[in-house]
Length: 319
Image (cartoon, rainbow, N blue to C red):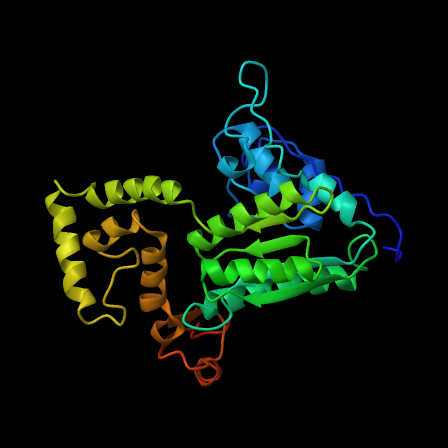
């Protein structure tokens, strides 16, 4: 039970290079009852990734909400390497300590109108869901969390205007995730703000935007996988059959796209996003429901999705 205005301790436990090698992730040979208990009572992530292949850089990202090239720790922190946080980058512990006595405000800056609104509104609903749960349990350090939402229309210039407005209205944590150019603009502005305003630092959580260099590197891997079957007659046949079938399929595109299109993804992240909006927008969605459901009820509640397949058992399930 959390008592209003009572101090709340935040304990962060970071393990060293174990990945998912724990009993709660299905590794039967590992005995980790305490961690398993935490996982059972809290949230266990199935899709969580480090920001770097080094432990120091990954931990610095956890403590700052920034990629290594933004927080300054681009390598190991121990002797002979000596990477450390940039002077203008605040540690989360310092920010939380400074915010303990004030209302906790989060500035959410993302597209809430226009063609990209579906992504921004979806993330906003996720944030609101967890914020409501925290507030229902007494808030953070006895204070209610307030999320201030700002529509940036996926524009770096508009985002900087919204960032200033959020800071002026008391937000000390900024969240954004759609648009790499937006993320770079906010990162630069936050670093400058923190350098000019010691004691009033802002923490930026970039929850989804992708660094261009990282995107290009990942795109090389994707292309290599697409080209893996170039010398295989059976793989070439499969591709021709798929291309023929896609002429009648609702999407007209394979999930990952054709190679000439994928080749452009490594140059600009917005091309990937445009591909998603064009081919995976709600009006193009195909919904498949499988399980013990009533087919007629599922079809009548499909909420405008153009195509729906319902796979329900024809006999009563076994007891």
